[in-house]
Structure formats: C-alpha cells, structure tokens
Amino acid sequence: MSDTLDLAVELIRRESVTPEDAGCMDLVIERLAPHGFQAEWLNFGDTKNLWLRRGEAAPLFVFLGHTDVVPPGPLEDWSSPPFAPEIREGRLYGRGAADMKGSIAAMITALQRFVVHHPGHPGSLAVLLTSDEEGSAYDGVVKVVDVLKSRDTVIDWCLVGEPSSFARLGDVIRVGRRGSLGGVLRILGVQGHVAYPDKADNPIHRFAPALHELTTEIWDGGNEFFPPTSFQVSNIRAGTGADNVIPGKLEVLFNFRFSTELTVEAIQRRVETILDRHGLHYELSWRLSGLPFLTRETELVSATRAAIAAVTGLHPRADTGGGTSDGRFIAPTGAQVVELGPLNASIHKIDEHVAVEDLEALSAIYERILGNLLAVL
Image (tube, rainbow, N blue to C red; front, side, top):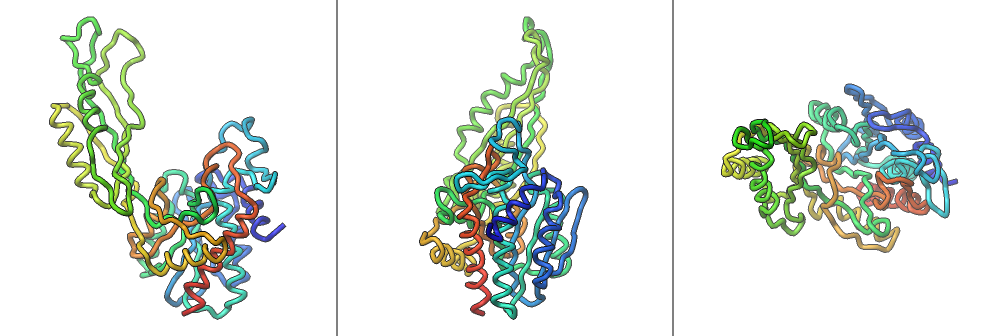
C-alpha cells in the first residue's frame, strides 16, 4: 500500500462528521512534525482548526483542506460501511474519500517528499485544516483568517483540495467561485376561513406574481469567467395543515449564486424593488455566505497547469462552477487561490469513492506545483 493510500485509509476510518475531527488532524501532525512543521491549534467553539507551518520567510504557500465530512445517510444503502474503507476494483470507498480526505492525504505525502528533496527550499509551507467546512463554517477558516491578519501573515498562494475534476483527474481546475447570498422572506397576510376569503388575506396568492417575476428576472449575463447569476427557491412553507384555513404567513427560503457582475447591495435592492412593486407586506433577512472570487492567469495557475500536464498529459479547463468553498475566505486577503482535487462524481453520495491510482497521481501533481513555485526561486 502506498503512503498516500495508507494515509487516506487512516483518515477515512475516523468518523469525522461535521463539526467533528475525530483525530484526523492529530494524524496529520504525526506525519509532518518530523519534517519541521510546527503545529498550532486555532480552535473556536466546537470547531478544530490546525495551522501547520514550516519556515518564516515569504512567499507563503498554503494547502487548505477540511477533515469533516457530511453524514453518510442510511448505512444499509452502502455497499460497505462508510467508515470502514474498502478497496474494490481499483477504487477506495468510504465517506470523505473524494471530499476531501483523499486530497489531504495527497497534500501530506507531497509535502513530505518535497521537503526531503528540497530541505532548504525558499519561502514557507503551511497546511490549514478545519473541521467546519461541511457545516455552518462559522468557526472555521473565516476565524483563522482573522487571526492570521492580526499577525500580518500574508498568504501568497493557496491550493484548496476540493474535488474539482470532472471526467479525469486534472481535467478541471477551479480558479474562482460564485458568491452565495441567501434570504429568508416572510410574506404577511391575514389568516381566515377559506369560505370567507374577503375576511382574510392569502399570502400565497399575494406572493405568486412576485415569485414569477423573481424567477424570470435576468439578473445578469455572466462574463467570460462566470455563468449568469441564478436565483433559486429552496423551500416554501405556509398553512396550518388544514385545507379549510387560509394561512396568515408564508415563508420562502431562496439563494442567489452570483457573479462578479453584481454586488450584494445591487441584488438586495432589486429584490426589494420587485417585492415593493407588488405591494407585499413582508419581512426579509439576508445571509452572505461568500463573495465571488477569481484568480486569473497568475503564477499559481500556471504552476498548476504545468504540473497537471507533466503528470497526466492533460491541459485543464479553468472553471468557476460548483458551490462555495473555504477558498472564499482566503481570496479576499489578496492570495492567489486554485482548487484541485479528485473526481467529484460521488461526493456526498452513497458509496463515495476515489480511484486508487488518482491518489498517487494527485500527490505527484501537488509536489510538482510546489517545485514549480518554490524550487525555482
């Protein structure tokens, strides 16, 4: 069993359902401490955050990852227990295999080899791990970034191990992400008997025309890096459960995934304009999960492209799709951020898996990225 596969197996065995770490970070410390990495815990609330650094000089390269995983779902639906990793037909099965314990294993073994081959490398290396990426993300990387800022720690390059690949390892790299803005909308009406609609005010009926306008609105046309902004309703709730009662309130949960063409303020203003135009009595609260970010063709992108080509022969497509990642907290500091990891076809699914051969290839890519950036300085 290779070092990367062995570490991935050991990580998957730990039931680190968010926000638990279950000893994953301790295992990483064991592997990197002998190579000169100094460990520091930056925990907040129930969230564990680990900062491992080797060196003090600039530039600073950071591997960013999360040890927490989503719940496995019905255990009986899995072909093998989700936290008892199993290799079948060249694939490693287990919760977190692709998202993202396989990536963490590849990061650690890449760092081990790089430091052995380049013990006097310029700059600094670091690993930032959190146990709160799949959950609320309130006490994870966002809090660590505040600590690093207070110390004037500048991250130059950040590689996030999120599963970016689509059909083959390295065919896609993420150079940015859309912003995520959620809203909770309450349409206020007057409850009453369905037989006497003149004595009530049905918020469902009131909201229907506005909902049509919100879902058909062209928010922007996107740009060369981002698709058009999307508006999606994720839940609508109203009523008492009885079919003879007009509800007095309607609650709507919605989300915008938005590009760099829009600001948060512009989205909020346009939504409220639509609601006001329809004469609705409403309450509206907003939650910003992250702003859009983009890393253009910089040293990190070039180094990543060259490493993928050298190991796989592929020329990756740059992409900004998918959900959000912890890269959204690093990018505003001015760091270059790229996401590269295994295939994402099975993430969050029953029988999550990663190809065994991809683990070693990913570790080799990570090592080459380090060499492309630091060994040539």
